[in-house]
Image (cartoon, rainbow, N blue to C red):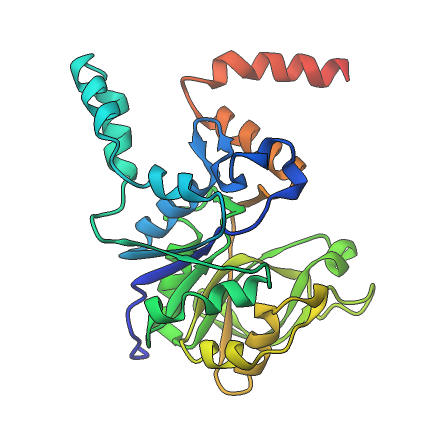
Length: 295
């Protein structure tokens, strides 16, 4: 077994403007839009807690203070719930809270891309490997969650881990795609990473789906990284440089990935999680069938 350092910290870049959801996101951060009755970002935090993450680093921007409030105690609300005997609701609030002192918030003061957002977390993460979770991406349907499986693979092979999922090969040009190398116990070695390859040139149909375990050396690379696509500092460009020095492995996620940064992914996530709920499914399943039949 490879000797590895424990993955204790997770970085969540939550500074994005959410322009695809305007006007809803004019006053409400896109990460706080709800899938059934939980904000999108809460699903991601719960996945990380299940994987053993001990400290959360939120890279925020303007008008994101509500995210910090969400992961804090609201004394008046909890007192009211207690007085009214709302024990289930009170328990759900208590269960979602990270431990005291287990959250940090730092500002990305300019919209310079995902790579820049990760770099903004450098002093809090320090010299240790960390998880990077894109808060728009909600994972469903695998025991323990996507990050738990990634941590398990990391503890076997070390290095850097990228979660992937399979897409229709005809759509590979829309994604960041990895090349498939040697099979591992629970994954495979990555031979290359290509951002939106030209049609017919993709090295596989495994696309990068928003979960990473990265070594701290990436911060030095990001500090010198030139702007790439969209005139932004891209984390993929930094990973390509890090891959010259360290191995990258892929963890194939076998569940469903919902891109809640897009309207269709957000709606599908709401439908899927509603149908998973015993208290809600009977109320919506028949109506959904009728809507589809009448479409």
